Amino acid sequence: MAEILPFKALRYNESKFATVSKVICPPYDVIHVPEYHKLLGRHANNIVRVELPLQQGKTDRYKVAADFLAKWQKQRVLMEDKAPGYYGYEQRFSVNGENFVRRGFFAALKLETPGKGRIRPHERTFPKHKQDRLLLMRATHANVSPIFGIFFDKQKKAAALLAQRMAEKPLVTSRDDRGVTHKLWSWTDADAVKTLTQVVRAEDVLIADGHHRYETAWNYAQERRAKDRGAKRKGYQYVMTFLCPLADPGLVIQPTHRAVRLPEGVANDPASWEKRIAPYFSMQKVDGLTALLARLRTTTESSALAFVHQAGKLYWLRSKAKGPSLPVVAMHEGILKDVPLENISYGQHPKEMVENLQRGEANAVFLLPPPDKEAFARICKAGRLLPQKSTYFYPKLATGLVMRSLDGEV
Image (cartoon, rainbow, N blue to C red; front, side):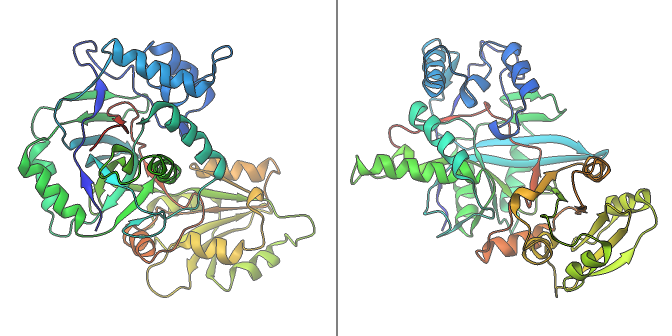
């Protein structure tokens, strides 16, 4: 069973900030250079200084992060809550003009060996990112940003509790640059803690986002455990996690599209691509990019996708796999199995991906519909790892609403 516990969050002092909108930031892996400098200039206490620190003179950037965190606690800019609890978290956002509400809660999730037990990953990770996060964790002794987990709430007990408690006034309300509204609650009472703990414990937890942070937390825990033998329920044995029910209507999974540049010497004509595709997908020609993009926006076929060749050929592809499937699997394990990963680029916007063809930077583009949530969950529970960048859970979780110390006991 997956074990979760309440924790004492480290949060921005509400008496010093009328709103936390100026001090929160996105997670480290989606912050681009212009946005980074905008965040730095927005407020001296913006958490980006800890989440993605800069070297200052001869001071190592990870020590810079730790120094900021310690300084802000000393100044009572950041304060740890007095009682442990679960923290309700709601995000209101829109996608293509449609409004959504995503609800869940923050908890301390007990770490398990990555890829084993009841905590299920779904993507492979990059060593470079894990080393960066490990150095930050060693310096700060904290979970600065959460991982994103999905749990199963078949009887809707958690959903009912979340809806009921989120009708109450939140502790914090903020809005980010992407137009997402964030709300936070604290629940320390026994009823809320017991209900949410039991629901999550009943089944697996799927890692939706934050695979690097999860594996880093595990590696960090092993380092500290080696020096602290026999310790039970130490803070470092858990990782701060946002948990959302799989059935939540606001659990939006967006696709990540592919632009492909074939290696030298590999046939690139439309007929050669048809031979690659035919074993896995049926192909239907489409007249015009506008019609193809419109079909992609409105389709309910989660196992289909669109294909655009640089010669101007456009196709709608339907999977030949039996039962619900994710087309990204057949695409990578079949069509693109001989294409090096460095020859594949990724993006969220179909038109921008097609521009790769127009600039001569790619030979073909694959445009995918949103992944089917149930198919995604089945693949994760079966222990299979999806190709990198198979899912994009939108919106990203805010960094800075809650943080968590890794010292002491849970």
